Image (tube, rainbow, N blue to C red):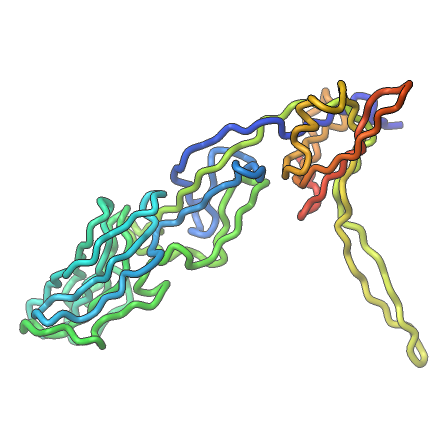
Length: 323
């Protein structure tokens, strides 16, 4: 009969902070991973994610001068830093003949506005393929695209409003598009759609994050119950038969913690914080259960017994098993 006699429960007693740094594309331009396997969600240590891209401003409008557009002041995420860029005029390069040419308006890696010219087309028809003749150029790695200007004549002229394109995801790299989720368990950022591979080398834009990995310490404890999903069935009788429906509920995790004095214990100081908990059914084996949730405690100070706390783990996700 298996027992938990040699079990061990650890809680997130500290955090190892990692400064803003580039995440690694897993290969699909959708999931970007970090060096840490797990991210802390504790207040003050929660991850900050900054994908490269436009945050505010940056509107591109025609100028009164030939071959020039005005770019409004903007803020953007650039290599993990929120960067302010002053508005300024930007000069475009027209094609050598009366053919299609796409010029991307960018913020370069130095935080300056810059025009990046595409290859002249073979006709007045535009291509939507990056680096193709008559198509938009590949953007240098570390730069962000904030719009495009599309022209079909070599003659110097004022740029018209209809020649300026600024649709997020097509012509503009926004920091908040597409949206993303944070996977605290795996220490990664997961976008709801693949990032466009519009940069030199057919790469997506940079994704940066600061985060903290949990440092675990053992707590004297017993009777661990992980937060898990339970299911229930309800039924309704109708003429001739019964129809049923199922529902799911995520229950609280719980355990009993044994304390030194119930006041100055490091474990007690973390009540009401969102923490990771790691439970080994056998401390001599590698398999464990991992759960994250807000720690709640209810202390008891008996006259003739060990001071203890009934602890709860209020989780937003069920615990997972790690073999």
